[in-house]
Image (cartoon, rainbow, N blue to C red; front, side):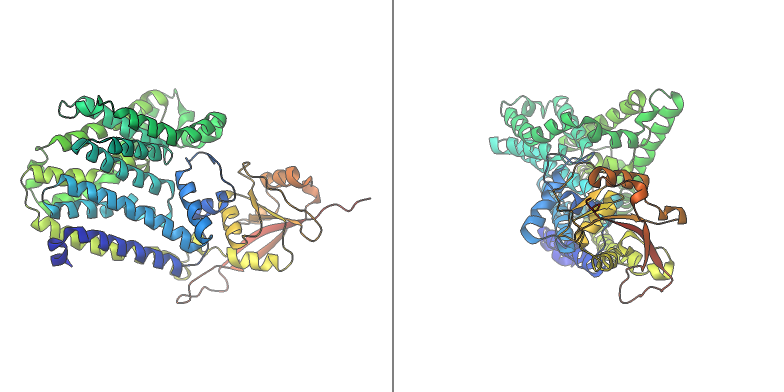
Amino acid sequence: MMTQLARRPMAVFLLIGGYFLLNVIVRLLLPHSLELDEAEQVFLSQWLAFGYGPQPPFYNWFQQVFFALFGTSVVTLSIAKNLMLFLSYLFYGLTAFRLLSDKRLAVVAVLGLITIPQISFEAQRDLAHTVAVIFSTSLFFYALVCTIQRPTAIRYALTGLAIGLGVISKYNFVLVPVGALVAMVSDPALRRHVFDRRLVLTIVVAAVVILPHALWVLDHLESATESTLDKLGEDEIGSGFAQIADGGASLILAVLGFSAVTTAIFLALFGKRMTAALKAGTVWTRLIERTVLFCLAAIVLMIVFGGAEHIKDRWLTPILLPLPLYLCLKAEAGGLQANRAFRGMVTIALVVMIAIPAALYGRVALAPLTGVYKKLNVPFSALMTTLTAQALPSLIIAEDDHLAGNLRFQQQSVPVQSATHSGFTPEISWTTGRPGLLIWRVLEEEDAQVPADLAAAAQRRFGILLQEIEAKTITIPYATVAIVPGSSSDQYRFGYAWIYPKASG
């Protein structure tokens, strides 16, 4: 493997493709319940819209294409995610091959992505919109580099497409192209590309991609921003020095959480000379440095003047994604040899490529032994098999989006609403033979009664009052894999209620 990659560096993409195929296989071997973001995709796929809530819709649209073409299944969920991740690595690697003279360093750069936990493990475990922004950021830097190296109208347009897709992937992506613009204006070697009239193509293409969702946001401003502002700590505006200190500390921890492992690995691979190489630079390292510094400075301003105090490492993904490429560019600028780093990174990558699928499988498969059951162990399939044997509902109203997505996945002929999402109210034929069905989780004994939000949703939809609802509970063994069967005492409890039309007269 090592020799083949040294002779044919572009074969690294075959290795990466095989890795993502392995992740698809592992996902198919696990129970077919859904993680949070997987369930969201299934739930939101019931209707097409320019926006769905606090997250932009690019990944939703991408996933819906797979559902429409190949059906809604674990296969289409897993293939869509792993294909987008593969394309992310592909564009990232193509950028590295363009910028680095030593192609072994390009291999080190693209495999360096797998050393970033948020991109390697978390993206596989359960992320959707972050996967979209990884892809968009990789495409953006590829398009930008191509445009700078050989400006053409098509390349300016491609850069605009990447910007548009990035903005409708994650809102924080907007800092990256703005940061790159500032970096280019401040660099005499790059400034002319900003004042090229073909930049109009970049702006127009980006605007066309963004506009439909932007108009939706203007009509749904509260639902589009409320969750994000809460996560950042918007409710703490004006709390003074303590808030700024908390925000600054969270930013530092987020940067370290994202970059520490990768930076430590690169320092170990290149040795003591890497420290000296960090002082060297090229036009490309300046571009990355200034882009990242602008983005971080913007976040600092958000902390100081916007009240943000909860900066998560995952939130920095589009900003710090160039890190492995940046370190390789520094190493080459400093005249470091790639031999040792190449061998070490390939070895590390191979270990991680085995360890991550094993960990993803083990955390679910070994749950009966550890007693720590995961979302994939929740027995949604058995629940729906049991309940639909009693009657086929006309509509299911679930307690939350995760529950709604899983129920829809298990019974795709029945529309499913969520008590926490008001954007979907399908037409139904509500009859005695096709009653409504309410479902919720019963984690504690007091949860056996219908939750207030769910009862309110049932009243709005069916005109049924809480006192008219007969709540029941059902206990079902956790879903497990064949090699480690669960104990009969390990069970999950749901609450449910059938809603029948009132008799006339």
